Image: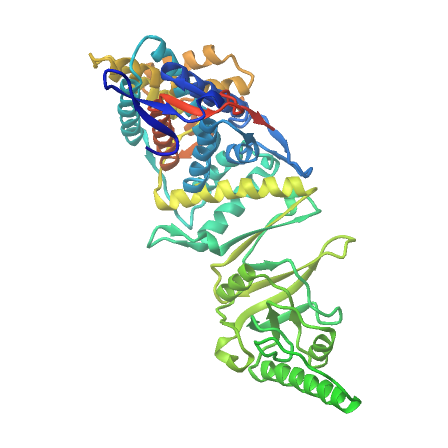
Length: 547
């Protein structure tokens, strides 16, 4: 028997387990354990429910070292919450996996999972076995996903006509802090993805899209740079601030005399020895700079630093340089300029140089902050989204928002089928699952109806967050969807006097919506199978989250 407990036998020879340190542990079994899980899941879902949709509210998180984050991105909120309950942690991982796979819908997936847990609680109170509930939810989810395939529309992904893609990106950005520059940000995201998209493989390499932010200026000053933006400046203030038709040497070796790899000690005992050493260093610097010049380079980008002597020599030889450029940036510059990263000066040849049409230094306002922009590169597929904002908090939220928009456009490049948002797809699926429940004679029909009710939690939350009467609004749209047989009818969150999401251009990717339903159902099914918890007494059984 393991250290967790010992096996013993009673007087009739029947085995039983004595759990170690049982007096110091808290144990929940059966329905009590399931109720504790459901309570934890509801606590997390209710926290996020108010952040759903274009009128959703933001949350402010303050970290232990005083950093303030204001966001309504579900994955970010949960990541920064101090969640103690193990089941609540599963919901945090659920939103993270939705973020990793799809990039959008992180709030919705947690709200749906929480609502499914609530429905499961009502079914448990009726005496239905948790496995029957879990299996019913699984079958209902499969039927809902099949229904999504039927109501999904195909969407054109065309470089010549980007308007449909911009409308999709605008739906994603509608609930974000940057919706003041709604269209501009959507256009930047679409142009960035189309610049790097591989339409033959139906894939987008996000490594080629760099998102850089700088505090200061307005959100409207944000732009897409077809090249690379590096948060560095030229190593010497007297070097030229703008270079044309540049040949770039990309080095990962420092401008300094070679050192033995072993531990070494150098004793200088006379003035002559010191002068010889000084002369040797100077000759080495001269040789290195000359090797770079001979290769035909007009700009040096170095991963390491170099001292003032090397810097002065580079200026004398009219060779502009940039030092301390990070590894990921070095790689992106090499990709953008079709250059090779060179680890030793001896290996530098003209064919390893990167080429760019323009390298310029940007200066911001009255501050001494400077950045380098490498444009008109040979490989135009590498792009940088350069964001501006009034403070660091807005820049960080803008980066998260742009990431969501980029992910949605990437998903459309992969699979160009869409469904309509505003809760329209969820209401349509709820009606389809409810109709299917009427055809089932077994116990699963209750799970089907519970699943349909859970799907309605998304439009209910949207209506509530928009200041509408949730039950009245949902009932009205359900009746209209049934009468008109129109799965595009959803919640009019923005008060545009029409419930047709096709007219409002509220669009979500089919891929994202299917993922939401399947991920939430899988998690709920897993939680419903847990009926016994043994935990140290100091851990609370109620999901607590310190924000």
